Length: 308
Ligand code: CP
Image 1 (tube, rainbow, N blue to C red):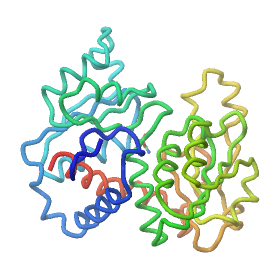
Image 2 (image 1 turned 90 degrees about the vertical axis):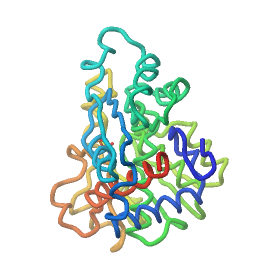
Image 3 (image 1 turned 120 degrees about the vertical axis):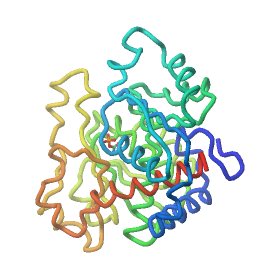
Image 4 (image 1 turned 180 degrees about the vertical axis):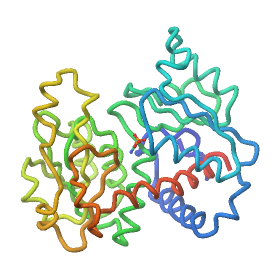
């Protein structure tokens, strides 16, 4: 989906080349350093944010990014209730209409594959802001940038992905991006009920990225540079008893911090519930708030690339 130096639709992590990632990160740093140079970049352009699932970070950082580049935003959150979806309109028809009003559409949807369906009928770029348990590629961009920013490298990283991996679109998108780098090793730490799906593991094997599956978080913590903790996603469970059985299965707290390397970092896409204790926030290795803040400049760089 990359056309020359521009990106058209942003649907999945696999579409990013390593050189495009490096250019986006460099542009993001330039924007952060000299924001005044970019204040009018997208003057007169309009971003529509269509959110069919709740969001704090993705929605507001995209809106802030567009406004800080001089553009305008419009949209609907809770689109299942507050857009004409509630009257029975299909996603495809909604996209056909909104693409006549906006220059770019940022779409979060509850169904895996929704962004691809939207891209098939849209006359403007679609940016996937999370499609059910599918992917969340712009989260992966800021996650990968955070790893580089915090540890000064991506090649050679050892990372534990922890928690609800079956439903975790952020871990899927990040793993796809990591497979473009050298000497990566991934530990998938999850109970069997929410283990990483086979398609992603097959992709890693095909790209010669070693991965290990385990339920033993304590054994993995001393081995890794990054602990990527995730929430057990209550909203993806049809059986609430099954959710209750898994809730709180892995918790990062002062005890588990003690098992980690001195320079290793704790990441989380957020929101967190109880899987990272508040006592961890004061530890310099807690990178999750810095990670969320990186979303602003990464999304500015992305919008600049898609629309600039
Ligand atoms: N990480 C993330 O996607 O957060 P929101 O659901 O708040 O957008």
